Image (cartoon, rainbow, N blue to C red; front, side):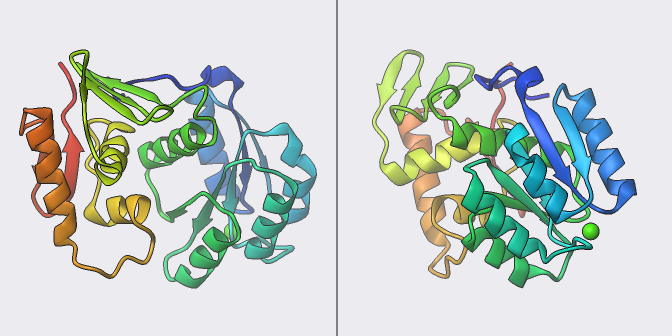
Length: 231
Ligand code: CA
């Protein structure tokens, strides 16, 4: 459990639709989500997902469905609603994953995924989809406000560039979790960044300097970066 106080909507109001025909996976996911305080229902077909859509706040959509092409289901869900959609793909389905993102999915998970990763992604898409309710992240003396895009440290504003803000917000969204370089690039630049990755180190160095505490953003060698949790 993160010590981060994110202003997420009351969890008992968040309803997650799980669209997955593998009963083993869907029962595991729905049981886990209920334990975390989400309301959740599972359906096994694209047609049932489209029918049930309006009752839910987030959709977890497996792309391998028995009745229809999952990518087409994603397109149709997006055409009918702005609800955040997290697609679930099997390894080796990169093409479908990219297509689904192009068609309006908000994020993706690759099977097999851990439950902590699933709930972190759900909370992240909810924060992005309702920034007026959520979007203020606190970690110790650090406040990252996604609505005004301001950073405060012990009550003092810290002037950061847009890119620095996005990197810090990505880390602050789940303080204590190691965020890979790849994930930062896909969230802050775009999915297909092929430029020099050194640019990220330059921004991280600038953020550390501005925050005045080099240890606040930790480098986890070979894995990525994390925002140190306050104690
Ligand atoms: Ca499936």
